Length: 410
Image (tube, rainbow, N blue to C red):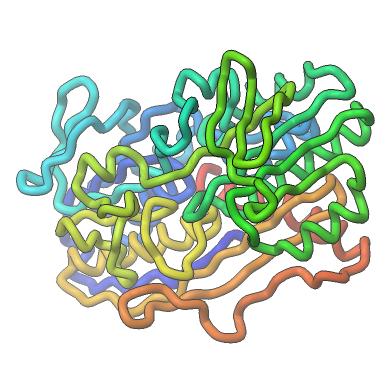
């Protein structure tokens, strides 16, 4: 059930072109794009540059944080990516020269390219919240980017005493997977209700509204009364500072001293996007929606969470769809063709309990240089769906995850 997008038809001349394409970033976008490039034209020389040998998937990771899922089920390697004919370079990309068209690796080597794909994911605006820093994240984890952080937050929640409080701080958008903080709070609430019944989770939100809000809040009222407390922006939910030494979370109206503080910072495109000169003043990357080529640097394409895409969501499913579109466009461009306007799809599940999930899906097409939702394609779980429907969607979420990860890494 992974998202899909049409691969552009490749002219026969493409089979004679042995161009070099480098993909930086091995997540749902980058790894999928590298494999799709080899499928589109096996003669392409495709190299994937990725810092880590193991990728920790974010979808369903909130269940691991709540102790409902083995974190090892979130980990994937790159053996099958390499078996597809993709060259692997494990290490950081430290510099990009758009003029010379090369990528510098951490060991000093330079890799040349005809086309470069950046799938850098997100980075944090560390200066946006006084008191929060990379060092602070070792005490108040964000658990938003890597397996170590996810494991740390899970460990802290498991170790806290019954009767304690967990605070989840939700940032302003744009951000990766906007429903995910509310899924996280929901599953933490489930864990507390069943294992630490005198405890509670408080959501401090920098916004007054969020995706699938009625579905989430209806579920909270039914499943977690007295366990999950939601504080919106207008009620004092904006976190203005943190103090790690005293474990204090400060808002305009109050101070909290939780046993566990999950601070999700404001976000921007991954650091390599700025280094490459493809991020604009917003911190995100403007792209041509047909090819995903940067509007700031020619021959560099940006996919995944880092790209500015209008109505296009920042989700694993959307990144996978973008990967296919971008790969097809690159193969067509290298062959001297003109890519056709694509259709991008996205599907996102949010677990509220192990047997209770909601979802949203849609299709998107370029209109006036940016992605717009195709009329009539947006489907969100009904607000008043019966429990068996919610349980069915929870099962679909697991099947979707297996399908997506199998397609990219299997």
